[in-house]
Image (cartoon, rainbow over all chains, first blue to last red; front, side, top):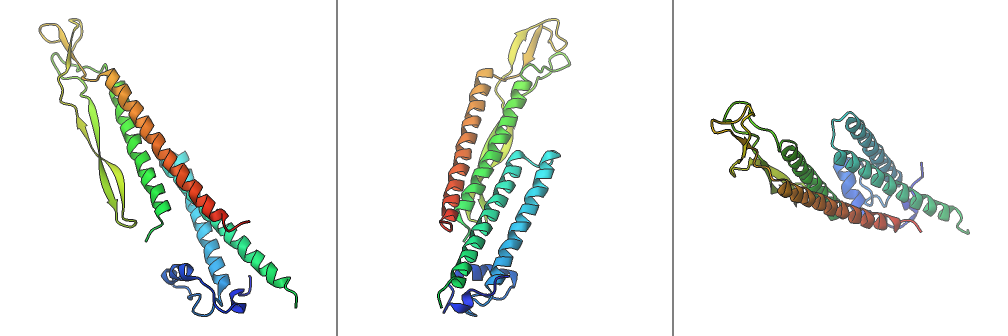
Length: 105
Length: 138
């Protein structure tokens, strides 16, 4: 896991993420100066996995004739969107980490 | 506050659902356009009509659409002279369904166009969402 990029920053603006985490009962980010960025990342990954799994379930239901075509397409599209967002955020985080590691000291 | 873009995806999806139901009713009408009764003077298949209603989605506060109910068309049946038909009355007339092909075709085309419009909404919303996510790359 990536060890707390935000810890090196004075304050991490994670207002939106914070509300999302509060609902799931995870430790709030931002108040602890972004100490747990890895928690955010793992939650995003978890969300992506759950969405993809439910999309697969709906697809199989659609093949068996239990779900409408629209429902299948909608579920798959949502999975794609979640995965895309997760990948983008991960890439951004990784590139920020690389940037830090390349910093001239 | 729910994401408006995700809400529009949901709303368009409800539109797709509603138009699909309409399409089903049209196909029922067309398939049963020649369905007569079985006993003399009995009523044939009665044309069905679909009506929509708007429905508030409490989570996102969006107005979705749903099929209100499927009504029966009370317009008179078409009388056709066919004395040999088992459904013919004493005068030799058979009541044919009150389905008019032209009306059904127009209805079908309209359902098709509405479906297309909703698909366009989905496409545009998806494009906007993807554009926004792409801001993270570069």
